[in-house]
Image 1 (cartoon, helix red, strand yellow):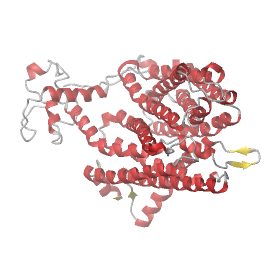
Image 2 (spheres, rainbow, N blue to C red):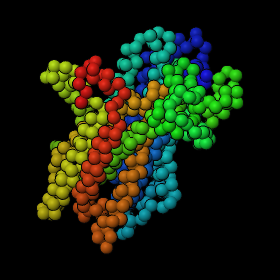
Image 3 (cartoon, one colour):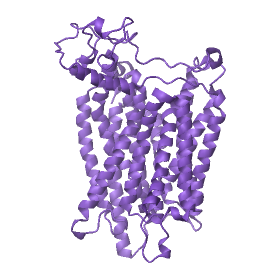
Length: 567
């Protein structure tokens, strides 16, 4: 029988493996990704202002550039994961990614110190010069390198750290890996907070040159520390890609399309993976079952039970893995509209810049630092839900209470609707106040509700999505579950770019001022966010339909019987 997903084997001898890995290597692995997060999240928030002020771009153009950059950054971990699993291995993928990301940061920093790298300042010319093609190529090259590098680091760091705890005495201590995951996500949150406060503050108050040099130095530190611990890492060989197996199912089903399947599964010989509990495929999406039918063992299989042509014969496990992916796609797609709302990063920065952000006579909150409210709201939601709501609800109901991932995803979409309505309302009031008072600034404190609601939406929906994918995908597809959110966010950025361009095109017909004008006081961003709110309402209805059609989750009925009510 075929074993398509071979176990990873160490590059080192077994006796050497016990001397490597362990907790001593984790600070270097986690630290490298942490500084990458500080670097990338440190340059992204203010990038809209940088493109508008230094490259003289319109807000729509700057937003399109950032949408594309964010889309590439979210998609690259999937590409890097495929390369790591199939060719390079995790160590070299992280290493190459770190070096490439550092090169991208250096290139981005060079645009601040080389006068010819960007258009001349408008103050020196009566008419602002537009960005030249070579200048735009240099800027976009830095973005591409950062995206590729970040993809290499993010795709493999979590799994590479877990590899260090899979050898010798560390494998026998199950609590070590739980502690590792806790510290990994804690370092992620801490890194984002540092980026949105310290790095952003330097850019606003010291200048772009130092503000972009700091992320580059952070990446240099990360690269050096990661390779410094190279002799102590457990480095595993790459394995065949799961995605190749899914494509093989589609190809085998097509190649065997002439095969007629009768009702039932007992009439056929199915090709099963060695040691698998799946001996026959399910009746759903039956046309895919043609991929695992053994028509003639002598012509289809080798003497050791492997298929002679894996593009014409697959295992039952491969077929069921593809079916699981197809079944999950509708609910997965509902997360993209919410991701479109979250990806609206350019306007909130411009909105905050136009408001009164002064705390004292000597301190003004940087516009991009308001994103920390979203991060803090995520942490607050997790604490309230896990430590207060569930214990209190269980005590009141006198039985264990658990809210299913689908319900929490729906709650997240609802909070997203409220966030868009709040953003539209605040912008409408800000614009009216500016028009009536001739430029009086509204307090930026009014931005807090929309950022909090966005944080609550993200915490409820995104965390529930991860739990949903891990519970519904087969165990062999855990790597796919890790990439689903990133793929959705990548596509959401592309859709957001198209949507923004469409609204801009429609709203400025007849010579009217665009809703998405570079002058925030002439535009109608309150209308634009009402459009996003309307799309979110439609998405909520679509989610309810998909959720009802999906049915109960795996093990949900059994869990309800054993542990209590599942809402």
